[in-house]
Length: 136
Ligand SMILES: [Zn+2]
Image (tube, rainbow, N blue to C red; front, top):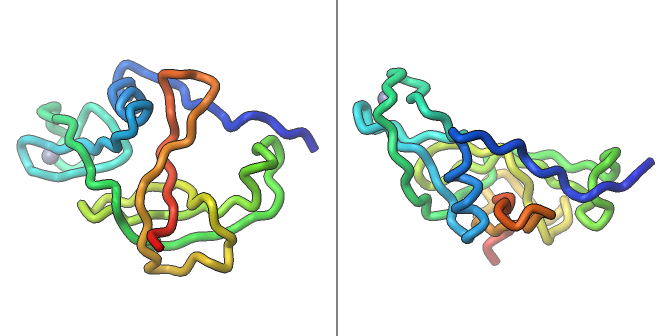
């Protein structure tokens, strides 16, 4: 078993604004200007109507746990971030994010738990990872 720093995402020109905003503590979604769909994950074309007329919008950063699982051991994952509570969070805007819920034990999380975004710094100062914590 080896413990590594938290993995840093591969940044593409398509997703760079998303990661840069996260490093500033802002969670972005994409909004299609033709069909009004707000979606996640970030991509240049609307997944519904395939329009390229897409803009970034600020998400409120709040949502609820749609589904979750927990694991005590993940090879290569930073030990201080275990156990890992992996969750689909349904944002108040509607899209669901695959993410993790931090600073809580697995037995504190339930489907429907109210959560809000926070950000984990990485070794790259221009990249932070949006994760969620319980709203208490
Ligand atoms: Zn669209």
